Length: 359
Picture 1 (cartoon, rainbow, N blue to C red):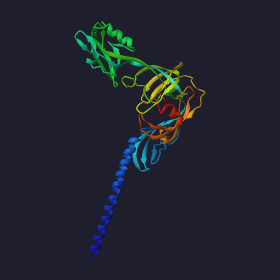
Picture 2 (picture 1 turned 45 degrees about the vertical axis):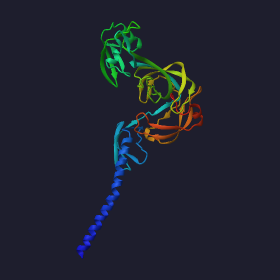
Picture 3 (picture 1 turned 90 degrees about the vertical axis):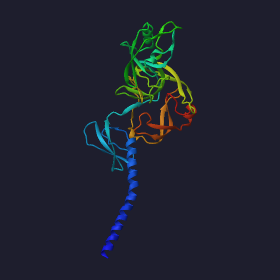
Picture 4 (picture 1 turned 135 degrees about the horizontal axis):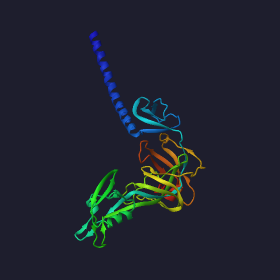
């Protein structure tokens, strides 16, 4: 009897553990999936104001390392228990800026010349393209020819036309990689001059919306996205540029399949120098500009949540105005798409149809 009782107890214990495993397996799988998803969504670095602690939206928590430096590590945990990711936390003592919303003009000068097209040359032996034959492609950037730096279309045209068909050594950059292409320009029968078969661009201009100005450093930013070449779609590499006052004349309303745009022009002198054209917009410097304007506190990315919000922009002849939007999605680890917005303001929808180019 004792033996049978113990056998029943063993069977009950085994049954209990089987049930427990049956219940825990999907729970563990769910936790692993959640940890992986949050690990991909969480950025690798955060910024906090002053000596503030890193506070994250539930169900995430942060356990920060004790440090006296401006940058330290923190471990992100799910439900305060499961490790998700180790991130860097940087303390920023000055997180106040002047909010933008005004339109401004941009004059951009490329770093080298951008290849925007290739076209055949009509030679005695038929159509051919010397540049394409050497491996040059649309979207490449030419920095030098025969060791001489080139920054304008005229400089490239002069070197090619005066080559008399001699071999040219062209320094090219593609996707951040530099290489040399060598070709001999071909004599065009119809034009009677030597040609490379290239269309190049050395500058660009347009208008956009100012994002912020940081008086302490003189840095300002605009657009929120890169300036891309209209023909190649590639980010325009700039060596220098000017930011000038501008004005909106009209709006080309956005419709399905067409983003629309702000239509305007330059309306004054340069107020700053443009120095960078990157994934998150254009950046420049301006000294003693808008120093008397009201400062606002910048919210760290972890404080941005979905829900009602407002944007500030200029879509007519007047001053910047506030318009209602809805933040529908936040991507904390986003590179180019940090947020998804839906315009809910009836007045803005009537004027623009939504978010148009230049806003």
